[in-house]
Length: 244
Image (cartoon, rainbow, N blue to C red; front, side):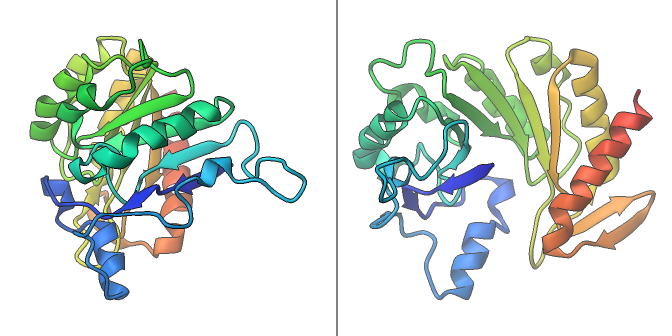
């Protein structure tokens, strides 16, 4: 079972994929400015919260999507990050996933005892275009981490990952389309090609959401938001059978 932990909220657009960012979209509907970065007042220590019996509310083995309404390596979070790392260390029984566009900041933001990485932390880099992949992944491959993921989300074009998957350093590739109003098209042909590349290199693949507008066989389908995830899983199963 997966959980979302947002120790801080808010971010700054820095990449083509940020144009229609879901955080900015949702904050606007609540009359909030997503550019303002704030520390969580109630859930900063979410992984450490306990019930009345003194047991952790988050069960061992849970996957924790960390800082998905901001960026864990954002400059404004420098004063809070050390405390967040301490919380992560105190729950070695949880699996934390940290996703970032700011790969150039990772090395300077790791805890002193990081070594080759914490066993319970996976770091993902977001690369929505080939240009972003070619800029970020070479830096990412130099970061000491036990598990490396690549997120192609929101996917804006076909991204050839073959030169990077061949390194043997990437554990998973996750692809997703863009959601909500003005969402750009996710072409299923791009997804299919990336799936095939992952299969060729023995890298785990995940199509986590179709996005609002999915193009398949020349036709664009409008997908309801609540169905983006289930439709993506059906499409992923189709790819598995097609490329058997």
